Image (cartoon, rainbow, N blue to C red; front, side, top):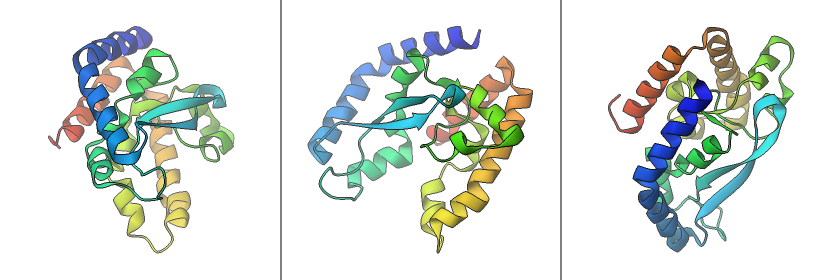
Length: 184
């Protein structure tokens, strides 16, 4: 049922917003020199996949553009992940996909998270909606991420693993929609 929901909703959203996503990609191309950002992420069962995002950084400078900051704050840079959902690499709800070196390195009970498809949204993503700002305020952002944020995300995602249901997914998705549209 979850897969049917994922495919149906992502196809509907792409049909309705496809033109808008293409416009955002075009504007990003003008702004950064490239329209899309592709990166390897850890997926279900630890298998790597390519995630699609709208590029927010200049290709020749390691800096986020003004347009890119807007895309990141609004989370519009993540809209191309609808394609990842259609391809079966992601789901609407599940742990956010991370770069290699985190979820693929989990031990013990936490490895159960690799059984889940990465998601467009999760309770952990809601809690850490402004993670970039939170990390920027730390003296040692990597240490803070590795010792505070990431372990908390793992715990929250394990809670989801043990209590996942279609109704729970709808609740999380609704809260994400409200958050991304400024309703929370």
